[in-house]
Image 1 (cartoon, rainbow, N blue to C red):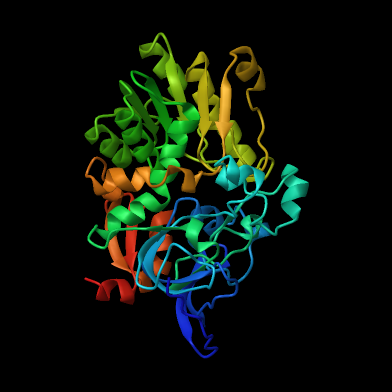
Image 2 (cartoon, rainbow, N blue to C red; image 1 turned 90 degrees about the horizontal axis):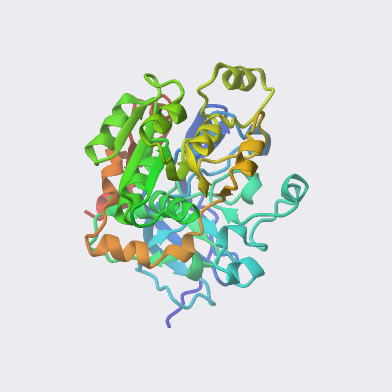
Length: 405
């Protein structure tokens, strides 16, 4: 294997999306990254996107674990420019998907394919005080996951590149590859945690990109009926067009009760994909506004109530801190299994990439808008305020990505 040593050029700059405070992402110039460890790769970013979980940082929910100037982002594809001397599976010129989870591949959890629980890639010691353990590193996702610079930038340093990059064909549409990097992988993880299988009746709270993909993948895995629960009329319309049964929370204030009224045997699998900011009751909305709770269990309560005794509920919308009025009695007495966690990204490849390449599954529908990377600040504002054209996600092309066409 040919390996090129990377020679740092301190004067080289790149454009990057920088966190500068609440509702403030600025496109700035920072030094281009260099190889700092033998298993690193430098990837020239072609396309990236904004994740719904990026809004936790944008909207101040994670301000206390943010750092001025952190490069945002964890969903991108690009071309390998340089590799470190111990990278074995990549070469300069390879097209790659950058996975969001940074993993060592050697610890107890990585050996169990539980990559987001990696013991070694997150230096943030305070997480041990919060949770008793550290979790893996994640690109561009606050100090709580290691403070790694993200890939909403023209270049990204990828640690442990053999494990964190997936080689991709050069003739596949960029939107399909960006769509499989994180959102599809997270959606598949949700289906895995809930153990969605043939004939199941599934309820998914949330019709953003992740929720919609969970719904589609549940059908892909053989679910007989999938309920799509949300307040957003446009996103509910997309869910209906994909063959789901929409439940409008504006019309049905207590969606669990509504689902139970038409599914007397309850849901087999319930999946929460709307996140800790989602509230429906006045009580939780008030507690969030007053700072009495940080996370909200509103949707989790509904999912647990609507799901069959003894079966599975999965939490995929990000929860970080604490909540009030969590239905621990209902969970225990109904003998249910509740599971959550960040995606095991590396575990689900190459399978997910294969079904995209083979045409069995296409995640690109989630990109209802395309724009230039240089406009990322405006796109954060549009995403936060539900003003992305088409209602879902934007695919951003860097100058390098635009030149590839």
